[in-house]
Length: 74
Image (cartoon, rainbow, N blue to C red; front, top):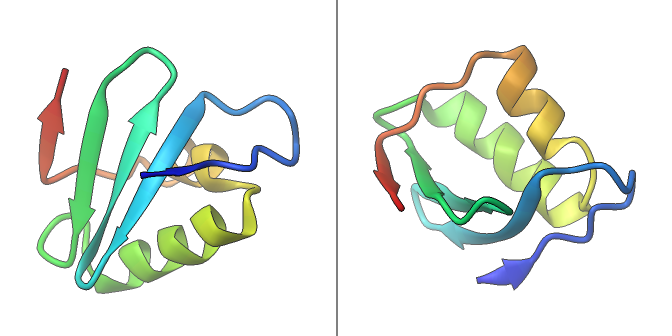
């Protein structure tokens, strides 16, 4: 996983991993979530990939859009 840049300085996201058809996001609390083309869908996943790579806005996007996840690991 790659460290999330957190350019805004207030994100709860620790790291991410870009997958071919998804993205894994690890939050500072330790939980890791998988978002993929099935859930929440291709458009949301591609938006999330772009935000993850930019280092800004990913946590806000997840909260504001009520993004569902496909899987979760504690």
